[in-house]
Amino acid sequence: MKPPTNKLLRTGLALALTGAATALPLAGTANASPQWPGYAQRTVTTADGQDFHLKLAAGPVTLPASGGTVHVAGTGYNRAQGIFLAFCVIPDGVKVGDPSTYTTLPGPCLGGREAQDGSSRRITDTGTGTPGITIPYARHGSFRTTLENVRPEITEGKVCGENVRCAVVTRADFTATNERLYDQYLEVRFT
Image: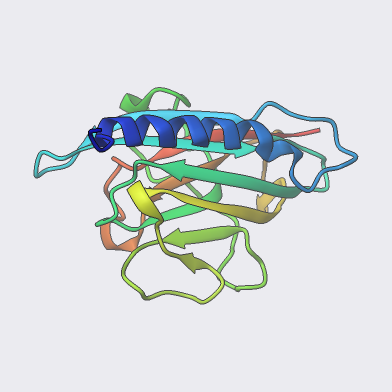
């Protein structure tokens, strides 16, 4: 019997991620109505010619006006490049789902620098970072975590659904701030 191929493993992981994404909105929300999770994907090619098939899922993507916790899973990311996972304002001109419009750094974003806040994460294999905020990639450039304290007021004067659109985003971390290859957006709404 032949061992599984990388393509077979990636397909299995993608199916597992999709299945997990479907269950994500139900985790920890026993009395909340289920919401369809957000899902984004894109294929990117790095300067050295490597292809990465980025997949991002999150749920719930509709939160009460008081805010809440969003469960997030991703796979296919470049383990040689750290990313930030955060809740941010979608820049003007960005059309969610159209990577050709991802030309501006997402932001501003919720704080999250304090470990107890949990509203952002850094995912990297460098072994450095803020305890409680920084987590390592798992196999195949994957991760699974939560964004906590997600709330509509990003900063003073920037309120999701009132004067800005907001999303769970991934982007390259501070080692490549201007790199837009890893930008993905999952729009979040508040009711």
